[in-house]
Image (cartoon, rainbow, N blue to C red; front, top):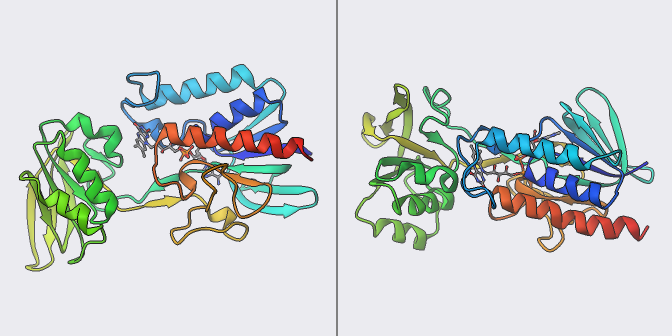
Length: 307
Ligand SMILES: Cc1cc2nc3c(=O)[nH]c(=O)nc-3n(C[C@H](O)[C@H](O)[C@H](O)COP(=O)(O)OP(=O)(O)OC[C@H]3O[C@@H](n4cnc5c(N)ncnc54)[C@H](O)[C@@H]3O)c2cc1C
């Protein structure tokens, strides 16, 4: 039986795999692909040690690093999707969509998350061409421009506050009359002269040619459709963690993220760790996911060696 199964090929899973190889833990890395969510990014400017890198190039470097260290210690099972994880004799069994089974004494879940997408005409077409799901990644690209934020929770308002540092104006659109964000965060945003807040309104269409040029929204008070002239649309409509396959095994929080101990990434089940965006970690960034993966691996190594 293997020592470890790692599920996920984003920064959390890859960082953990590199450490597993170096610590000589017999490991299978199961992932649909190597790279993770930011593979689609035009320019990542905060991956430490690289002032700017295309997401696809970063994914390539992840593969290069894995191939350089894996030897016969880490086996890659790529193009595979885990559909179930269960406690079995002596450890755990991960079953994939193709019906393959992998067994190990310990498991690290690094299956990440997807952003809840903006579901209106034009949103898909202009994704990464003005429609974006990551303010700390793409915010600086919209310096001096008019932008919109979709979402009235803390993430929406915090995104707006970040953008106010560079954007010419920020318009936040929220579907309900009441905001979910903390009052103090709303007050901070309202204090900016170039901040506009539109409540009880829904986006209806993203407009553009090569790049976003505007956003149509429905004012639910008046039933009128208006047009905003913006070049960036930041969507903060929530995240969807990839955790369905562990829903019956681990304790999840109210929004289906795996509850993990931030000191060592342990979950509610002995022998299972979780790292990165699939956990109840507060912040979602590549460096943080990689760090969580490393932290988990340090703990897994000691756990495996004690048995
Ligand atoms: C468009 C975009 C741009 C971004 N830009 C930046 C940036 O510039 N800087 C920054 O720090 N952060 C950025 N982020 C955030 C960053 O990408 C995430 O915080 C980070 O990728 C989380 O890493 P992770 O390893 O936890 O999960 P993910 O990157 O989500 O990786 C999850 C992995 O698990 C695999 N997987 C999922 N489910 C299964 C399953 N059931 N079976 C097998 N494999 C599975 C996926 O295929 C993937 O390989 C960006 C996010 C987006 C969406």
